[in-house]
Image 1 (tube, protein in one colour):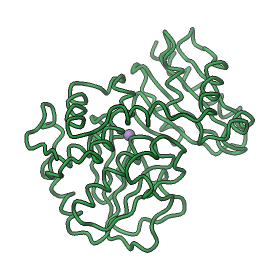
Image 2 (cartoon, rainbow, N blue to C red):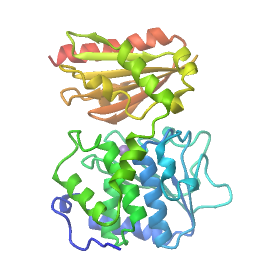
Image 3 (cartoon, rainbow, N blue to C red):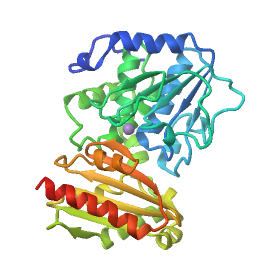
Image 4 (cartoon, rainbow, N blue to C red):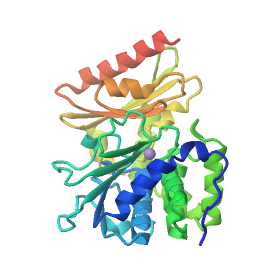
Length: 337
Ligand SMILES: [Mn+2]
């Protein structure tokens, strides 16, 4: 098993030894820990939940893992994926809660009250720091990158399972090491994780080659129905209820479907709308970096990263609210042309 006693190049600036020791002390002195991720957990969130599971196992702490609406995905092949639950464990009686990759408390568990002091570990710059202890690091590409730093600091042995979990998050939140959040450090960490036993083919298959057939049809629909505005700087599409109904619902939609829209030449913002049901509109934003889409999402109650963000609206009029968001993006493009 691998240890990382020597800091990798670039980790020193991201490693706050005082804070890390404080967080580890809270875990060490806890009796039982509930770990919570965000609704519809993505690869980074599922990787972070399972990485926390391995860390807590190593520290001998009883724990439970929860996130709502876990999608049907290739991640189910990960070791101990079956430990994930859609709600908090009522029998655990935790005295510490750890939130991973959760940009806000409303994106956690419906109707649940946090029963204990909490640690928030997240890389979304829009995070309001809703925990008792907050480690928010927008310079990290993934929450799994943060957990790599924490585990390395704690001298946790990097088993193949832990390395796999962290590599899933690092791979998916960097878009397969293609996004602007990818630098030398992300490649260094990936190299260390692979050396520790992470499987690149398994991670790639789970993240990119486990799509439901209906998910490919949804991708085709988005590609086919895409519309361009603002002289080709904005590419947008929508998945309306009948399309979702025909394709088995949102659970079949591939993660990062909106990236497809951003990939068109000359596009600065890709915007994908989902008509989830009669009163729910969801939107995903992707930017080339020239527009901070996390600020726009935040204006509508959402959040995320400058180049990748999202929002969920309760709506009485889907089309009117969709156009409100579209016009807001068009205004931003005009103001920054
Ligand atoms: Mn993330």
